[in-house]
Image (cartoon, rainbow, N blue to C red; front, side, top):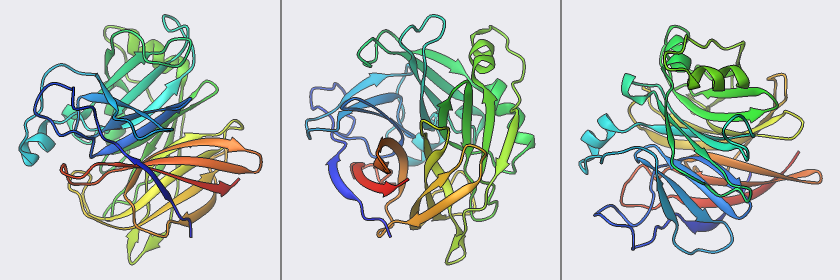
Amino acid sequence: MIALAELRALNLSTDIPGTRPSHMSAASGLVCIGSTAYVVADDDLHLGAFSTAAPEPGSLIRLFDGALPDAKAERKRRKPDLEALAMVPAFQGFPHGALMAFGSGSKPNRCRGALLGLDAGGAVSGSPHELDLSPILGPLRGVFAELNIEGAVVTGDELRLFQRGNKRHADNAILRYQLSQVLEGLRQARPDAIEPSAIDRLDLGLIDGVPFCFTDAAALPNGDMVFCAVAEDTEDAYLDGACIGAAIGLIDNAGRLLSLQRLDRPYKVEGISARPDGDRLNLLLVTDADDPAIPALLLSTSIAR
């Protein structure tokens, strides 16, 4: 089993205006650039930026206008459900690349995304560009019984989205797209539907009758992928359930499962970042507390490649 070390809680600066909690609780996507961890949360309208080297409070970068209700049920109904975050290399208008956030697509109002340009040092620069992801996510409703995109990676000119299953529909899959086609399509005022070039379906196994299902992934330099998964006792892409197990695994560039190792504790890990170090991978992960009063955690571990 894999043991994780707790690096910090995702606490926020008390200088942030408003009555929101002084932390992120539902961390769901992670990209690390240098010593900064960029985090999206599925119940927020902001991107969080946190130091991986010190427990100093993080800051927020607004992605969408407006405000979400405080009441949990209403907030859940109206949230954009940002579940994935990927780093996109330089392209037209973004000379230093960008961060791209994805809604899960599990409901019609969860098909928004955001594009944030980066500067030469890897810091977010300029205002976010809101994206309508319906051309990508809409066609998938006929492919999966319950659509729920939870991870995104870019490798070469390929964007890979990770579909998360559940106890009733264990539809774990990797959806492959030509990145240049996606970026060009999303820049158009009325884009046509963007279909995946391939779909790789994977069985991640069970624990106590509950399937392990993708929660995020990170690309490695050779095109292989490392992912995190949880066994959440729910039969619905909308409703939460008890997390009875969690794991980290490796998938090769062709979409074949290479390994799956359980965590020694059932952390609900929903974001992962990887940094190769010789024959090992140094990993950072973030958690979803499933309770707005509890801060999400930044965790670390190392596994063999």
